[in-house]
Image (cartoon, rainbow, N blue to C red):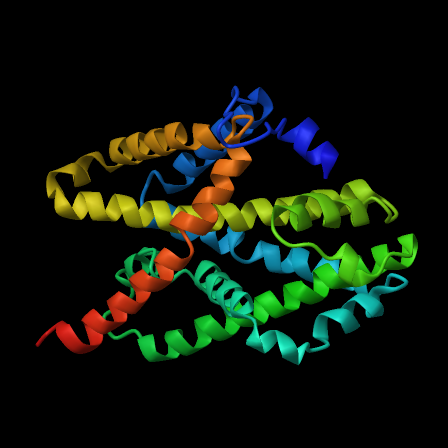
Length: 286
């Protein structure tokens, strides 16, 4: 964790010390926003084609990592830890809050992306069927990903002699410290690291495409004259969001990310969704 914090993030002692921009992160940030713009500059037509790859290929990588993970010594210890229920945790309010945040993050209600993409469906599209299939696929993917992660954590526990409960961590540390550390113990670690981080990158970009397209659609719907200049609107939107992201790639950027993650985009999204349900169910159309 120290190497990740000091060498990669070059993290400061606190959010009150933002420090300077880490130039390696700046280059990655610029490249990512450029890729986002190129993928969505033609609107839903280009997004739809790109999403076919970014949304499906991670499943292929996930399956490959799963096959590799379950064949490792100690993998089943990690899986046993993963599927063994701890009933006393049902009384822990934080567990319910974390579960709610997870489902709202992974499924994406309340952000506007689902509604925006659904507006492009055919008029007679079976929305009821979609509302059943999408959550099932989403939750199934999350459960399957758990097997992928904990099989490798079980292997790490086997190699180091540390209990799985100690190895397993939450937050960014799991994706950027613990799991990569376990991957280094595998044969050809560079290959597995490349597949893992490529999968994470595609998942992040895939989510970003939809959310930004929802924002741009809202602007062009409010100001129809801008539809003729959608590429310019897209470029300007990406540039403004790039400027906003600069605070996250400074020495104190990880503190900003954590602040936004929990206080600006967790419980607030849940409350927004509840309000939406009340409005649609009991107010809209009355």
